Every structure is written in C-alpha cells, then in structure tokens.
Length: 106
Image 1 (spheres, rainbow, N blue to C red):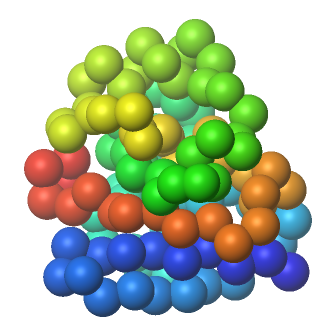
Image 2: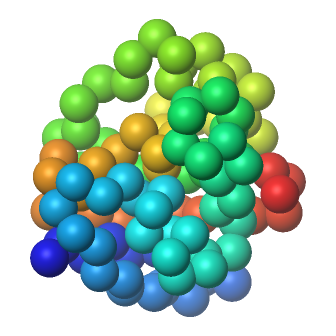
Image 3: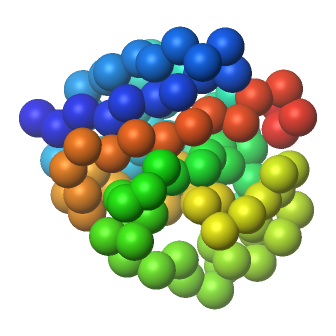
C-alpha cells in the first residue's frame, strides 16, 4: 500500500492510501478529492485531473509523454509542476504530494 497527500484549495492536507499500480487520479476519485474530476476516466483525453506535483517528487517521476503534454496545454494554471494525475502511478514514487487544482477545471 502506498499513500498520496493531497493539498486542497483550502490548504487542508489529506492523506489517502492506494494500491501499487493505481493512478493518483484513481486514489483521488476513490476518496472524492475536490478538484479532481477525471472526466475521461484516465484516458489522457482531458485535463480535469490536472494537479501540481510538489517538489522534489516532480523530478523523480517519469517524464510526461506527448499526449499528456498536449493535454496540459488546456489546463488552467499550468506550470512546471503540472501533471495529469491519471498519468502518475503509485509505483513511480513514495511520499507523493500533489496540489488539487479545483473549481477552474470542474
């Protein structure tokens, strides 16, 4: 079992467990994390699961593939920390902290 810490729009931090191989989006949806919608179900065809990955974990993840980079062009508040949570898997890192980007993508 792995854990992901989500920082919500209120600044509140929530820690949720997930199984190795689950995506961060799966963990978010299983726990009703505000701001992560996952409208496409993890198919990397929308950006409603956009998150900001907190350093230093952003540097330890596998780089985003072209489809993810293309979709991030449409994400509100995109910056160097931006990733689609459907493309981050719990076997890639330990102690992952992500900031949920609510309202604007819902």
